[in-house]
Amino acid sequence: MAADARADILNRIQQGLGRAYLPGLTATTPPPPTPPPFAEPLVDVFTRAAAAVYTQVHRMRDDAAARDWLIAEFKSRECRQVLAWATAKLHLPGLAEALRRTGIEMIDSRLPGPRRLSDLERLEPIPVGLTAAAAGLARTGSVALFADRDQGRLASLLPPVHYVLLRPEQILPDIAAWLAADGVGERIAGSSNTMIITGPSRTADIAQTLTLGAHGPREVHVVLVGGSI
Image 1 (cartoon, one colour):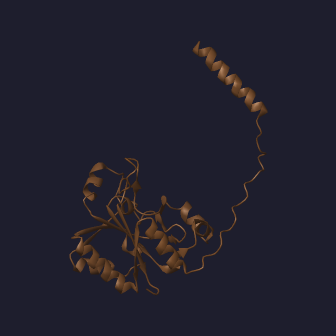
Image 2: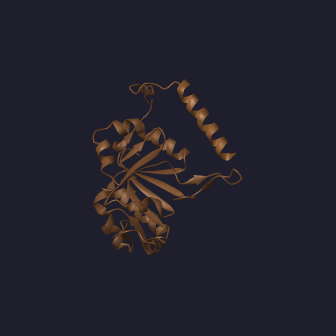
Image 3: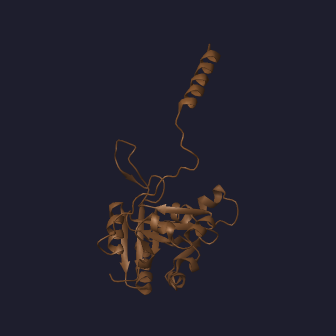
């Protein structure tokens, strides 16, 4: 009986395929219309959109102000260690030395070999992660990050609090504008992982109650370095 039912189903599928309309292989989907430009600076659009997805944006006058703010922030959280990218990839000169003078150690987010449970257990207690954005996407308040040899993705995934360094000139209208920018496609192809982060991890599966940090950081802080405050 089961064999007969299976044969009947397959026969009906075969008959349906003969009547189905399938577009030609040369058919293409037209691109979506270009959205209207924003009527205000992209920095302001990004800041407002980020707040809507529970990302906190902190605007700093210059590198020195950003370094001082991060040090004070980490000290207020009683951090002794920060899971971070290689210092050259953070593009904030002097940060590692300034943190070291205050007794805060930057821990490399890259693992030396194949990922082992013992490595994750060693890094798991570190309370904050520090990375730098490849771009900010104003329309959604998102930040884009690349992961590669010097930019371990654990820094943005494992700690409960994630800090992202971003420059105003890196903010673009949306993901389409970012993907169309020079060199971005090649950079994505050459990265082990590309992430677009839109606020902290969240879910409302249980009783429709919003919970932050369910599958990743429960806090995301964008440190916007440079430009008018």
